[in-house]
Every structure is written in C-alpha cells, then in structure tokens.
Image (cartoon, rainbow, N blue to C red):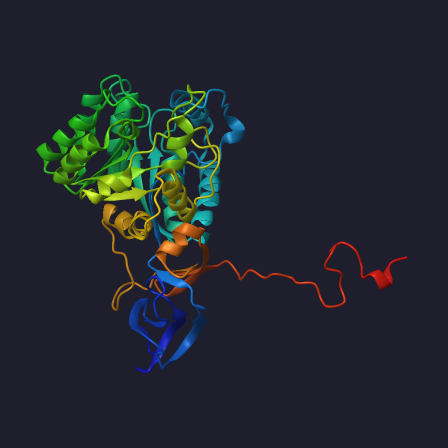
Length: 432
C-alpha cells in the first residue's frame, strides 16, 4: 500500500473528456485505482499528465487474435486467397515453428497492440501434433512478460479438426490443465462437425472454462453448424460462456432471418465476434464483380441483444496478409463496410472494441471511482469522433503505471526566411 498522505495522489491525468464533446475532467489515481474524477480538481500528485482535451476511456479489448501464426508471410504462398489455402499453408508452416520464433513474432504484434491502446486480448493458440506445445509455451511467456501493459487470455485451439486427429484432444486436455484459459474449436475443418462440437464442450465442462468457436466461414447460409452450437450451449448450461467468430454466412441472409438468428443467439447467451479484415479478404474470391463483402452484420445482431465485438484475427499471414493490430482502424473499417453513419450506430461500433468486447471476455471495463486505473487517451473529442477519424492513440496506463506514450505530432512550418514554394530549395537570395 502507498504511504502517501491523504491529499497526495500517485498520478493525476488532467484535462480529458469522458464523453463526446464533454466537459474537461481530471482523473486522480492512487494505488493503481481511480480515486477521483472531478472537473478542475485541486490536488497534488507525484506525477501529472496533461490530457490536452483528449478522450479518455478504459482501453480497447481484442476478443479474437492469433499471435502464434502472425507474421509468417515470408514462409507461405498466397495464390488463391481462399480459406482452404490459408489453412493449408499455415498447417504446412507449423512444423517449423520454434518457441523462440513464435515468441518473437507474437511480441511484435503485442507491442503494436499496446501502442494502439489495447489493454486486454484473447489469443487462440493452435495445439496439435504439428505445433506441439511450442506455441503454447511461447504465448504463456508473452502473457507473463507483457502483463505490465496488457491482460492476455489463452484459448487452446483445434484449428485442423479433432475427429480426424484424436491425439489433439489429449493435447488440448493437457493445455487446459496447464494454464490455458479456455477452449476453442473449428467445426468446419473437421470431417464430423457435430462430434467436434461435442468434444470441445466435453473439455469445457471438464475444466469449467469458456468456449470460443470459429464458425460458418463461408457464404453458404445452408451450410451451418450454428444450430449444433446453440443446442450444445443450452444442453450444458453454458449460456454466457460461449463465443463464435466469423459466421460470415450471415452476410448472405435477408435481414429478417438474421434477426431471428440474433434472437436465438441472445436467448442462448452466445456472443459474436466479427473479423472484418480477414472476412473481407477470404470471401468472394471467385467473383469478378459485385464481390460479396462476407462480413456478418454485427450491428443488427447487437440491436437484438447479442453481445458483439470487432477484432483483429490475423496479422501478416495467409488469412490476412496485412494488419497492425489497431482496433481503432478495425472499427472504422467495419463502419465503412456496414455503411453506418448515424451517431448512435458509430457509438455502438466503438463499444464493439471496448465495453461490449470486455463483456464478451467477462472482464471489467470503464472509468469509475474505485476501478482499476487502466486508461487510454485518444486524440478525439469522444468515441464517435474516434471511429470516424481513426483517432490517434496518444498514451496509456495500466493499473496507474504508464505503459506507453506515442509522442505528440508536430508540423514543421518553414521560417519566415525560407521559401514556401519549394521546401527543398534555399531562399532565393542564397541561390547561385
């Protein structure tokens, strides 16, 4: 505990906005917790930071990312740009993964995520006979080494199926006994999707952990494993503990049917994550015009009670050959793709990378007195402006300790004696 006197705080972050175009306020921190939020707060602090009117909030939450297979473009081929190719190329590369290799690549992405204001993350880690436990061991080290800035959940994940590779089941069981936080499955890569779903739930029940499925990654609404997941969730009483990612075939359905599915998901307590960059890249490759977007309408599902989030998924690999782990950019991308413009819609999109995403991971979020002093500043007047402008993330604190600062942009204007017509030329009087 701090030995500071009652009138002295560890930190005060001054002149920040807590809502769109809101009045400026100061946030006082003591012992890693928010001790006070007031306007023009008169107090002393060991450290003080001027927020300069920036928007302050509880930080971004990435509900779905693959750290173990990030940044492997140099060892994979992309000729088709399809899901089948991405799975195949990654499976081919996995045997060459070493613990050191996975750690270095994951650290690269995690540091980018931190600098972009992400404070919590759920990463899937593939565990099977090809990857072994090498990736799992590396990501456990990442989780520990970067805990000063970000909380990471590890999802032990069966990317390449279970019924076709029974040894994977035992490996996942061991990972859950060895500090994995939850279990993940991928029914569409398994010859028997329903058996795959059943086995994943058996492990979830055995270890009392949440479940996160990659699901229905196609544009065919008639090919779906969603009813089986809903049924299993209810059968095991796992409402509120199941998430599904992608579900791109929802983009091929009329809105009236999407609403019916939303009601079913809401009743079953199943959360949805969409991955705009990956879903856009891998869907519709066979079309030469009017290419389908392949992005599930998260805003419609959210409006009907489904907990929704927008996440990164993959970075620089065959699933997504670009990316920088910026959830601010991903939120803006989704708003563009979904053609959203109204203030309420844009505010909901921000929630999908913040408060709603935190709800999906069952973790706290928000700036209130008594909460953890995890605070991110964005160069914007509020959440809506941040989405519309892809607001620049300025700085962040985790439990009251500053974890990063991105510096302040500066425009270098020419002096009065310099030519403004051609910056590369000296003043006319100096030319020969």
